[in-house]
Amino acid sequence: MNVLWAAHIAHHSSEEYNLTTALRQGAVQYSASWIFNLPAAFLIPPPLFSFHQHLNRIYQFFIHTRTVGRLHPAIEYVFNTPSHHRAHHGSNPHLIDKNYGGTLILFDRLFGTFVDEDVARAQHGGEPVVYGLTHNVRSWNPLWCNWHQWQYMWRCTSHMGWSLRRLEVLWQRPGWNPTQRDDASFPIPSAIPLRPVYDRQAVRGVAGVAYLLLTFFSTVVMLKLLVVACSSDAATAGGTAAAYWQAWGLCALVVANTTLLGGLMEGRWGWPVLQTLDFARWALVCALTLSARSAIEARLATAATWWNGVHSTTTTTTSMRAPPVSLDALLMAVGVLLLPWSVHVCKNAAREGAVLDHAKRKTPPAAAAAGKDVATAPAQT
Image (cartoon, rainbow, N blue to C red; front, side):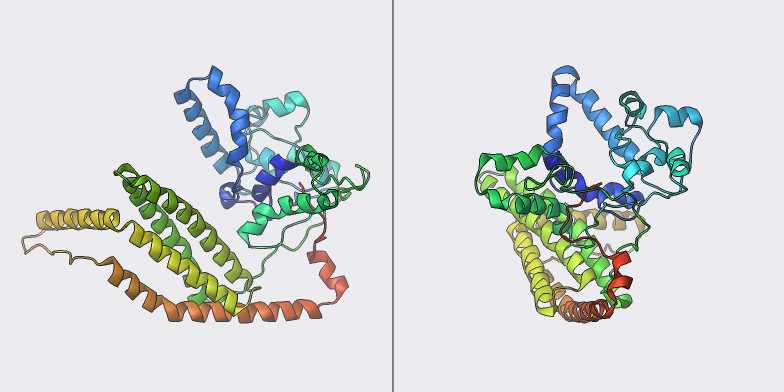
């Protein structure tokens, strides 16, 4: 179904296959998965269901790897192994819609959707598994990776106006187009050649890479701090409304940070757009931090008290007292320090992106064909 594939497509859009692929999940995937979990609510005790769900997620994390080969035949027959899941992630035509299992592979064997990685390779002339989609996204933009299939569904039914038949695209197979015959709307290629992996790098040098890492890890820390602070605000009298807007602010911060990271790595948008997005992201961080001022300052005071207690028990000298922290001064100081660094990285990324675009325009079409996907076709695997 298109609607389910659109929710899951971000996971399969990776052209690499390693442990990070397991973490590459669709933004709206879990908004649809409850449909399949609902029957379990009437049959399985919640603690047992929760245990199984978490075990399934942890197990699937470790099978996203090319490092582990085949395991013992008994394990390969019962469980979903790295070998089986590599075939599931292949965009090769003979691997599409195979090996759906999460922890067990028995149901794929039972319903005829199982394929053996080595057997499939031998039957197709040694063709290796090609990861990604049949028509790759070729973008670092997380918004586009999550929403490009929805955009395709909207575009291919836009001529139908507001007809109820337009909703048919939601439950039709990926690639279905109401204006063409079903078998011609999105032909799956007879073979998927080894393609150059999308590797556009507009951020170069130590300063640029360090800024990307700082942006990423500071986002994780800030989200953790703000989630705790917002939870405290929600528990106080009259804090529910504030926590509601803070939750939306946290969602906006995640979108802004991930979009900025993708924009910097690609360098397509130009310096004004990148710099504006970075300023907006920092302004959102400041607004959220100040909105949860009391909860954050309380935790900083608790941390300072803990530090002084540990220090006083490990030395005979006078305990170091943490100075009082003013969030306003702290945010201003960090902003002043980051401003020149941000301008430098955004300008360099935009300049490098322009160089890459210029080089791409000068590349002969025949030479570029191997690394270019069909832009108008929907992504499918």
